[in-house]
Amino acid sequence: MEKIGRMNSDSNPEWQQTASSHAPDSGASQRHPLPQCCTRGPTGPADEPAVVFFDGVCGLCNWSVDFVLARDKSGIFRFAPLQGQTAAERLGTEAVQSLESVVMIDQSGVHCRSTAMVRMLWGLGRFWKCVGLLLWLVPRPLRDFCYWLVVRNRYYLFGRREMCRIPSVDERSRFLP
Image (tube, rainbow, N blue to C red; front, side, top):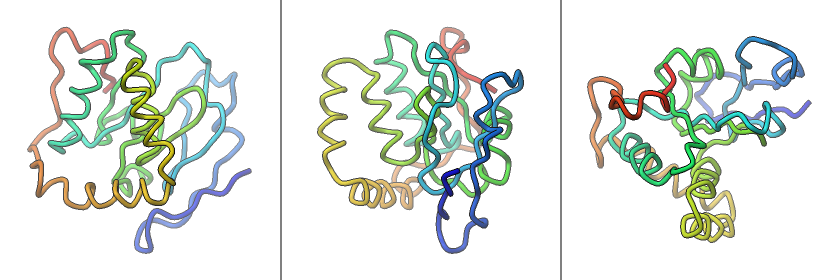
């Protein structure tokens, strides 16, 4: 099994992916232990929508969700706040508490930081797929460093909300608890 690295020097100890987290016949929600830049490998059926976990109290993260919702005409993304029940079940409580990243789980694996953002762009139509491909050409350490700079200052630059985003009636089917 592939070992998952640490998020930072003061975060929780390293996590290790287990074979049971990818068991195709398990009826329960799959749990994906994470930090660092997440796991790789199939996580479920190809027809299952991608799930994007975001910081529900971050102004930038909520703007990003609105951006994706407005452009995701095919409805391929579902959203769940990192503070919610779905994140705790699928990612694990300890992993969620140590995360400072958007996380996307799709049929190809679990993706964090800039990789999750690029993969979201790939699902938003031709123009945004091209933008995502251009960003993909930037070496991941550089992409993740730029992502880290924004993440470290997101509350200062974009504000912090007192509670998680409440979806509109039209959006409710796209959000998980």
